[in-house]
Length: 143
Image 1 (tube, rainbow, N blue to C red):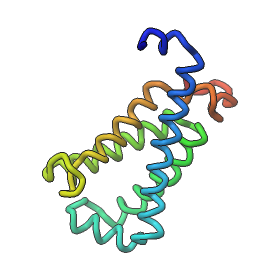
Image 2 (spheres, helix red, strand yellow; image 1 turned 180 degrees about the horizontal axis):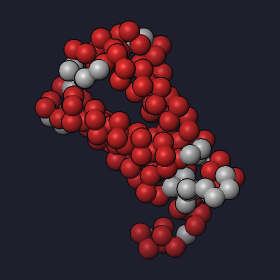
Image 3 (cartoon, rainbow, N blue to C red; image 1 turned 120 degrees about the vertical axis):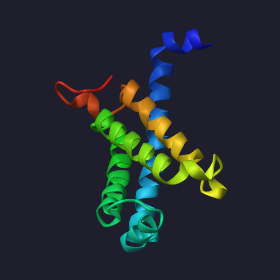
């Protein structure tokens, strides 16, 4: 089966697009949550309680990155750049906040951060695919 997928441009395109859209949507949703549900003040306070350094700067940067980066992934715009930034974001969350709590999310664990980070890293490695706005950028940094 794997041989079939790697030899089929249509299946590769479908897989890249699915991964990009789903991971992008989840990042955008988390960024939206930080801005509008928790509010930036609430997110900053939560980051501070979790020991995130410079929470007043990091919280709005992370919230903005997650919204803008998530939308960029969904559309396939500057995909590899945003995917790398989101991967770094998740590595920070994983090691600074979630690793000590173990795997499972109900205990504050790292499973969601690991999945989102791995998804973003895969997108960074694979590129945006054929169904993306990156296709129209001259000299693009996309697959």
